[in-house]
Length: 597
Image 1 (cartoon, rainbow, N blue to C red):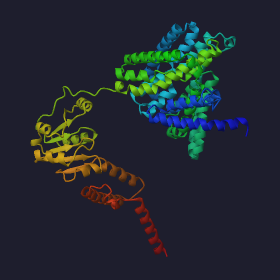
Image 2: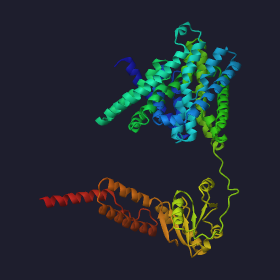
Image 3: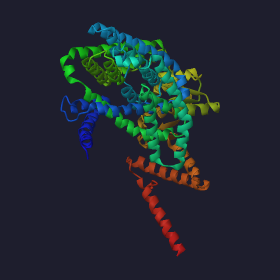
Image 4: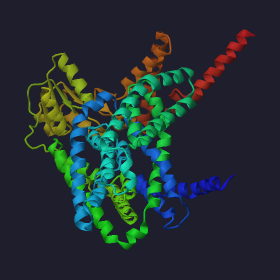
């Protein structure tokens, strides 16, 4: 084994060990994995403990993580969905990059007193945000496919597209004679267009047939190889043209978004994306010049704050201009306020172009890293400020007696079905709920829902419960118990009371309650799915009916024992269990063997 192989294995131990420790700690503190990777990288790097070296070489490998991330995002975005987002991508995204880039470049020029070319080469890259940090945050929060997440992604996507013109600007400003022989900006633009068209054609006429062949073979490993090949080949094509490798991977993903192999590819590539993206942030932490920060701490901190405030204010203003509500616009501004990983790439380009010194690239790289580290903190401490205020019930009408025969308390997904079926039989219904937003939404569909707590006797009386034949509690949760229901029955003895129960525990809480019926909210839908599943595997219809009847008999008896004893484990022997199934199967096999002999 040569030295490089030994070094790689030895480097992996402290890298993965520190990453595991700090990611666990920062996850536990609610600060996200990114900050944990950055801190772990800084500690094991050459400037603190010195346990690992060669951050630049690791960065080259780790940048594949960004390409894989963009590939997976592309798999989620069909061309039709991208076309629908075009206003946000080329409107909001373009304005964000231009305004933030000019504003930050102006701050750099004013504070540092550098030349205009140096200020632009430092300020424009700072307009870009961290795709590698923001997208996982949106994914983990389940907000990537929401309108908020789509706007954030639209801006990030245009930022990736803007890398080409930013490289062109730096090349045009270059003082390096070697760059004078490089391709002009218009040619780079032509390369971009040609590469995108080439990837689209390759996706349709090469990749899809390839995945069809692999799918017919049924080889899982080949899907992994083909998925990684697709990402790396697309990224390599773009990189060979001096363009963004991540953009190539993204386009490859979009081309396969409508294919039947999307989910298989997503599952195969995801583990590699997670590992390489973590390695990327470890490498960023390792390259962080702590000496530069120590020499100019107030400058680094001040510029990081200026960057965050400037970008947050501009993005918030633009988002409001595009119709985003102020609180969500504020959240969007904070989420994209940091510098991004492509800033390191553009600073390296500017250094090669002799526009900035190595020290400047290091200091501004530290500013990007510091701004990235603040994002989880900012999102955490501003959570209450960003939260939409609860809608006021002011002006909403309380329930009143309108001669209805039935009162439905709770007009959510459960109550809507109950109420509409009663209305279908011309039974007048009074609807009551406490969800202000739902009441307003129901009003837009022509349904009158009164505001109020339908478990209060005085409010039910106001709604006409004394003359009603039915009171149906359809609200979510398990807030009802025997005592509450006895009070309602005592006040309105002529009304039949029906209750939606959350689960078995809810039913047990209502033991002995004077109700006409208790319905466990998921029971019927679960039984329906089980019936359809048995039909799908060819079980005879009479057998399905027998199984359902037997299950209901056992379940009813078990629930009776649970209510009488107050013990959730009571009647456990009545359950259909895997052990009982295995014993029954063994007994049947034994009987069949006896008959055969």
